[in-house]
Image (cartoon, rainbow, N blue to C red; front, side):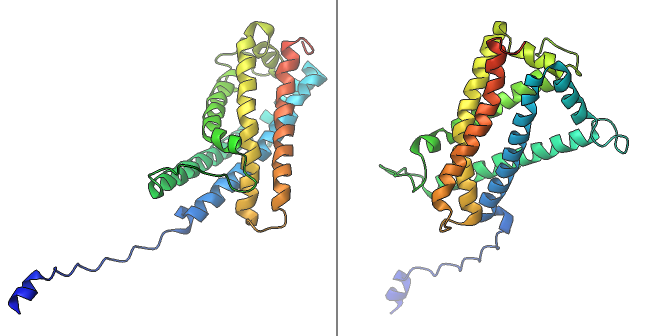
Length: 245
């Protein structure tokens, strides 16, 4: 009897129940945060793209548009204050978007440390788009840094006169600076796949996978990506080839 008792394994202490996870830190909360922040960034891209097209109206119209952005809210608000509020909001959206993506990716890797031998993409997903999402995001992030240094702060732009937005655009995409144009177009190429898949994913996250719009979200994502990317690309191409000077 005593021998049997000695052979029995000691009882394991009961595990403490895990504290409930905050909703915004759950996978669903992070996906919603990434979707909402992504949609806000897409809206900004659309507005920014439309603003860039003022370059085709000439120097006066482009500079007047840029001046209007810096003086929004005056005289009730100080000079450029509302513009900086918008910039801070965009930075916050970008941080939330990137942070959510990183956390979700790390959780997915921890949950599946060994990769599947074969992985078939879910219905509606593009294998090529999914494969380029992460690398494309890095390219776009690096381009944003360059874009800020070039056309916002003018650190690397030949035109230092801030009010002359038209001159800065012409200078940065001049034929002599063709590597900048090539980098710009490559970043837009990466942005196209990111938008195409991202818009589809955001709609699926918010509306749900069983919505009747499931089959149409692919077309919506493709249309949004094409409009934004082509709208951005037409400016550097036109300047580089002398259509705008």
